[in-house]
Amino acid sequence: MQGREQFATRFGFIFAAVGSAVGLGNIWRFPYMLGENGGFAFLIAYFICIALIGLPVLLAEFSVGRRGQSDAIHSFENIKAKSFGKIGGFLGVLSGTLILSFYGVIAGWVFYYLFSYLTGAAGNVESGEFEGFFGDFIASSFGPVVWQFLFMVVVIGVVYFGIKKGIEIANRTFMPMLAVLVIILAVFGLTMDGAGEALSFMFSPDFNALGDINVWGAAVGQAFFTLSLGMGAMITYASYLPKESRLPSAAGTVVVFDTFFAVFAGLMIFPIVFSFGMEPGAGPGLLFMTLPEAFGQWGLGGTIFGIFFFLFVGIAALSSAISLLEVGVSWAMRRFNAGRKPTTLIAGAIITVFGFLSALSQGAVPALTEMKIFAFLNTDGDTITFLDTLDLFTAQYTLALGGFVTALFVGWGWNKVEALRETGLQDTTLGNLWIWFLRIVAPAGILYILITNLISMLTQ
Image (cartoon, rainbow, N blue to C red; front, side, top):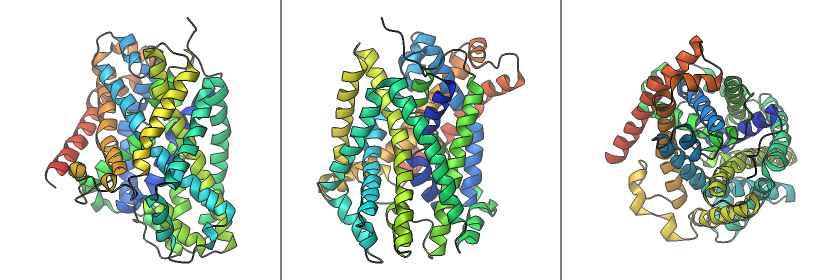
């Protein structure tokens, strides 16, 4: 039997893990979550959740993957047969598959905007008309499906060529490009008139807002979403690691770079928003309506900025989508004893076709646009789209549940000595602290948020 694939270098794994973490969660989701939840208060809550929950769970997922040397489900079974941990693996495969189905749709919108700026179509949109430009596009029955399909073709193509020749090479190309682009765009943003107001919004203390449980719930959800926790991605990637790799430093590096990209995305976006007197809490429309309106007021300069901005967002989306597809492919290869290439094509096709439902749920198919049967998931309205249903279901429940199970498995279900030995933290205070966080702090925090989300859903 052919041995399991491995990353060629430790840096290849780091780039891939950072690529998985850095995606639309940092650029599309983080800025509008920051805007909707009070700016600096959310940032503080986010940092705390990353440190107390995100980092410990990330290291737990790394340790399970490398020790298990298999997909997100079988890695748990390889460590301890008939363990409850495989529930976390199942939730990871489920979450990764569901998220990729609608993630590809949103990424398709990004690529459509990039194409529109490159061809000049976006530059010709009149001031105040981007809401209509975006609304007409996503409500059509052709455009969103085509662009989602094209995006998924690229993702499938990278995963098709495997770990070393596909995923590692792609991420070693993408990550340096992303770093350069985000620094350039953030520095440019800080030269704008609204930079001072943006910095105040992002970094001026408002400790009263920290008493709002919704801020903490959003922060935990964002921490899981942005670090790709509970999706099976980090378990799967770590299973391709050689034994000599240092897991704590790898986890720390991923958290640092992921946080760097998230903060710099804010520094890139909010100066533009405040310079043109726009609303920082504009929700998901911030990326597709608010910012393009601002770009349109610059003329040619805005078109050039728009090209680089959506190129940056598109590359970030690609790197994350690749890891999400690999989760399902890795599981299916083992489950059906199949080769990588046919498995990638079949799994990719299934997820793409399922994603058509999300692509058509923004107005093209009324039954998918106003799904009253799932209205209980939405605390802000009576109806909900198919895409929103998948987003809320995964962000509020399956991701957190997957992380919850993983934390309990490593903290309580796995032999403590073996878990610490796998991370290289045996006989250290840091190792004992990590286990304590997985046993008490992380599960308590996740459970509290899960219960809060459930109560909000039931009492709306």
